[in-house]
Amino acid sequence: MALMIIEGCTACDACEPVCPNEAISAGDPLYIIDPMKCTECVGAEDEPQCKLVCPEDCIVPNPDWEETEEELQAKYDALQ
Image (cartoon, rainbow, N blue to C red):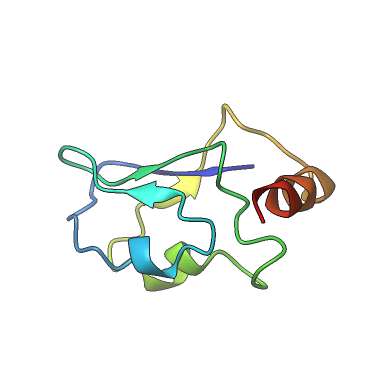
């Protein structure tokens, strides 16, 4: 399942540099996670790095992008 950023985002820029897939970009006013690139760090890390660094806990699963771990791994492999 891809992640998404919800209200509460302070645009602190902590999440963007830690994303291994470059799925996070600055939006207006919130940062945005591209669900086509987000693998929840499957293939790169043990857990989503953006969630670890977000000071506001505003990164949550995107209900419109339900994917299995195998699908996330395949997406990661295709992005590399």
